[in-house]
Amino acid sequence: FALTLVSRKTDMTDLTSTRLTRSDPVIVCRLGHPKEKARSIKSLVDCEWVNTRPPGQAGLPSNRLVDLFNNAGLETPNIVVTVESLYDTLNLVSRTDLLFLAPRIALEQEGFMDALREVRIGEAIPPADVCLVQRTAVPLPPIAGEFAKMLVSYSRMLRKGAG
Image (cartoon, rainbow, N blue to C red; front, side, top):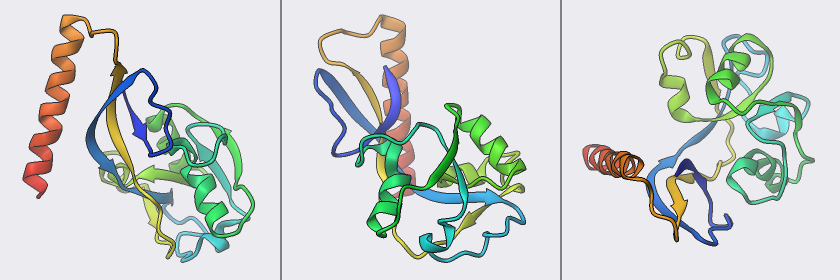
């Protein structure tokens, strides 16, 4: 199984998805970044970005950054590096002038809460669901199945506590 972002346009052929939580994306920069006080995506067109995936098909969760720019009538952002690890990406952003579209929870993580800041743009950034995704026709091995059940149960407990 995988824990991943799933949007309405994600191809789920032969897959089963269980929603765990909603991803609340924000643009993050390092403390003291020259664009930290920017209030519009248009003021960020000259910036360099890091992304966890290269830009591809519009409308997919990994392309919310591209969609944000396209919805504002702007060209694709200047993604200069892709890094697959969220931790490595946040570490890179905290030490450079790169910007990143991150989950809001990243700003609350020990080691990053003092180093990263949200760039509070006025444009809405559409959320996506964080889901547990698995193949429909292939059951999980017993240990993986139990772990998946624990993750689903824990996410439900968190949602009840937040609501």
